[in-house]
Amino acid sequence: MRCWRTEKKITALDLAGDELGFPGSLFLSHFNRARDAGWHITVHAGEAAGPESIWQAIRELGAERIGHGVKAVEDRALMDFLVQQRIGIESCLTSNIQTSTVASLADHPLKTFLEHGVLASLNTDDPAVQGVDIIHEYHVAAPAAGLSREQIRQAQINGLEIAFLSDGEKRALREKSGRGVKLLY
Figure 1 (cartoon, one colour):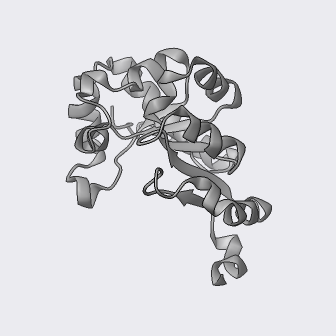
Figure 2 (cartoon, helix red, strand yellow):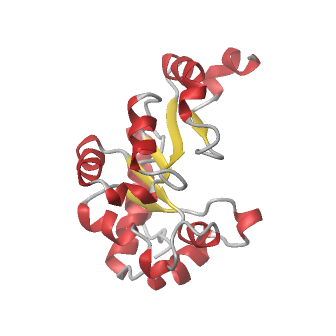
């Protein structure tokens, strides 16, 4: 693959798509190569498949962030592991409703993730397809999911914590927000 030759321009590798039909194990060699190149790893898991798909993403592919991760709430040991290892979850509220992963926003586990100390953040999945943007997720979906203002802000802070940025870049963003550049919520 040509991209390996430009590896200094690439930050991360993400696996997204049909996790039931195309499990992460099919892509193990690609993820091994990406990790060897120093890339970060994100895997969409725990949306259509159960918590075992999240365990697989972490153990086999080296996931540092999990896209969706809704089913993590079904496995207390997994929730504890996510906290201990600081593995983030990219929660996509509206997307999870549209795909029938959860029945309602009130049923979404983002609030539980935050209460448990998981580094869960609030995200859109695919704004062009889903028809929502991040402003909608913060101002409409998150309150409908039962998140307090403090929890919404924590989700936003978590987004920075799990971003694939250097410590210096994260520090600069924190300082910028401290100088009056407001966060979304």
